[in-house]
Image 1: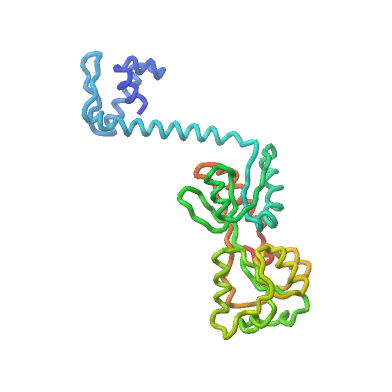
Image 2: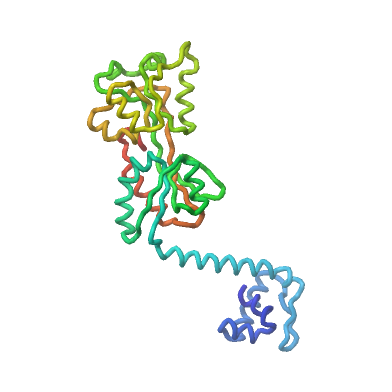
Length: 293
């Protein structure tokens, strides 16, 4: 492709060979190979002069585009070899609280010379920051955006949790009617999956007994431990409390399959080495504790 474009630009095979640091027979052989591939003549040769054919004129913009794409790709590959001095991470509050403290030390082991900056926000804000190049990598709820590369990091099942000694502890299953009568601490993070929790109560004669509403999982969790009520919570938020026996999961068949998905997002072609490392590390520490898969 370069030989073809250079012959046109320089006006002769000899001058194209000099510009490409090749011999004239080598340039000729490359043009002949391209002509065989395309099954047409690209130049009319008249002594030392060459004239581009109509077929060559039609092919020229495509050749130029291929060369440009190749050079951009080459630059991108070499740029990716050099790691950034600082990786800017945008994430939701839950990821900041429960994922980053476990993930970041392992990430630093792989990229020890990189510094990390973490900012938190809701999913829409983080998506905007990645698009605007304000952060390099985002941790968000399950989103698909045409200008971003998105990959699933983990799914976090939503389960009903009670404090130690609650009457429901030890029950094989708890009905929606029983739950609705209990004082509820309702954690709401705005994800679509929470709509499915709301819908479980739609067919009841009376609304659920929601005593407290909060958009902070730590607040909801501590209120349950303090016996203010029971609560639907993502499993990742209660891993430590489950091990300590401070919170007990309750079996509610209607909640099976309801989970919050967290994705990693980057601009296409950027920070792939970090993204792959994050997903690999995530698989290691996202154990089944608390129902996390």
